[in-house]
Amino acid sequence: MARPKTITDERLLTATAVVIGRRGPGFTLAEVAAEAGVSVGTAAQRFGSKLGLLRALTRQTTSDVERRMLAAARACADPAAGLRAALLTWFEDVADPVEAGNHLAQLGVDLIDPELRALLGELHAVTERTVLALTREVDLPSGPPAGRAARVLTGLLFGVSMDWSVRPRGALADRLAEDVDAVLAAWRKGS
Image (cartoon, rainbow, N blue to C red; front, side, top):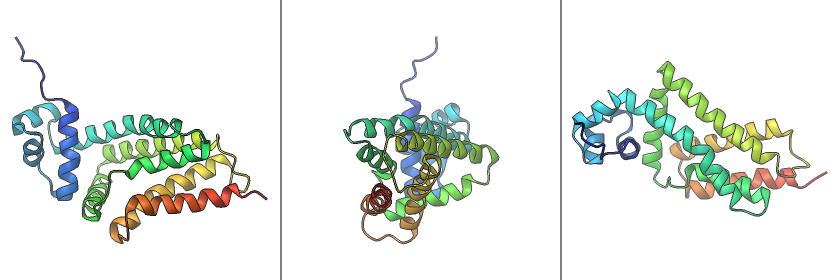
């Protein structure tokens, strides 16, 4: 009889994200296992390798992003406030520039692997589709068409996080909020 699965995939994937934040792309399966409180064999059996962990982590992030963004948006009565809240969910837990830089370094390595690159493309596509749906609910009389506005806002989201990772000034959440607010305010002014 097989033993019940007591260590969840989510626990291992959460540990993976923590270890990447601490170590960057030089992280090991052993470090992930230690963070999760399991044996290396358990982590390897579940995901096969470090690459398997990265693929699973990207898939999990992709499946969570739309739900997380929409929940933040729906918690606001005003559609513009909802769009803003949705954008800010992306990096709400990132406060340490070293950790952010380590994730950014891992991103650079991920782009080399064709499957990870494709998975990251889907993550960005889901983000942009969600931003597009929310943008269509907001009156932006001075803004570009909704599709372009969604691309600009998604690019702003990822660009601010990258810039802050290499040139941290203040908190990432504050910087992102300021930049999102500046763009939305300009687009909402009207003709």
